[in-house]
Length: 141
Length: 139
View 1 (cartoon, rainbow over the protein chains, first blue to last red):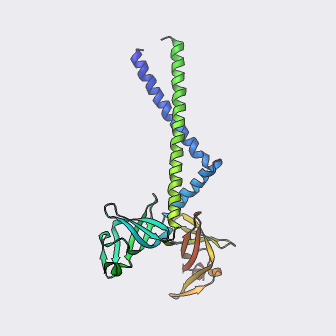
View 2: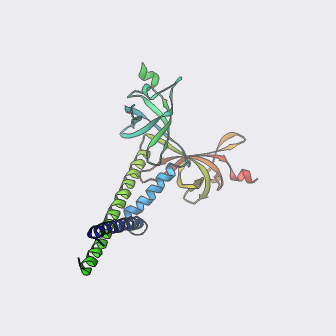
């Protein structure tokens, strides 16, 4: 066997063993939660919690707060109530109601009070299904 | 290269690749786990904030224990909700909504439960609406 073939073969073998080792490492680490590691057992509980919260078991999440910032480009609205804050994702098909007529995210202004019906997505994003701008008349005066 | 050196080199490559692969695999999985924990902590933090007035759940009751914990099921997903002492319980009788007692809630009922999420990720029910009573259906 030539020297070049031997080097190529060694590299290929090394890569295969490396991938096998990586797989073993992942399997080993992912098995720790159930047995010993406390943080990891919290993790498995938590990930199932997000799955449940984003499932059809949760019909809707009611949110109410004051608009502190709006990112029209990416469709995000930050809300606050007291010292608590929350960001909701607004999509093109989100129903936005301005008391007597329908509107868009561009009609929402900082300082408006919103009542939002939302769903939690599996990636943790809170997606608005409908928004009522409860202080629209007051803020538009 | 003689045979001994070749065997030694191959063994070294195998061991080194395995060890490096293993370490990278463990680190990768650790980072994945920690980002999941972070994401969940953020979600629970969001849902337990004052901005969220209620998380409304819907499903069939599969169990009620003596501590007022209700297990709700919908399409195979389940969650446990602790019903608060002062929670309002309503039921529909002949299309009329009436306030009833906690004892009127039965396994098999289809319900809406308005909950709040505590900072430790527990669900606390403060209002239950029984849409379809298992007891009434059985009669």
